[in-house]
Amino acid sequence: MTTRTVIMMKNDMLALINMIKSEEGASITTFDPRRGHPLVKSYEPWLVADEFRKVLSLSKKNGWQVVYDGEPLWG
Image (cartoon, rainbow, N blue to C red; front, side, top):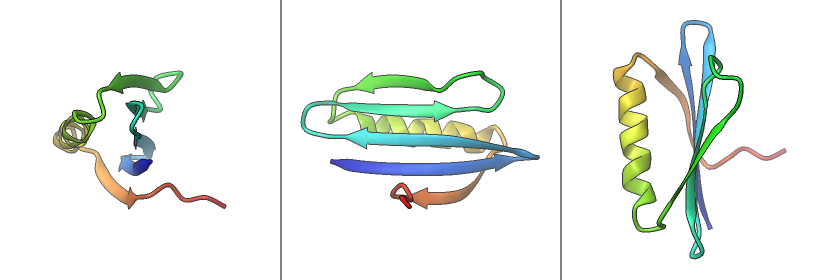
């Protein structure tokens, strides 16, 4: 399984973009503090990395700055 987590900051807000990819399926989860709940979208495993890059690029264009990019931090 492959995972990637990006924590972003804009003004005094933090947001999260997470990608999970396995042989069975893939998803991208986004959490924007202006929404009340996370948004999860499912993708084909071969497509998810490109879609993740698009989501990340759009967030950066909208003024969000990356503060962490890598595997989820556990513990």
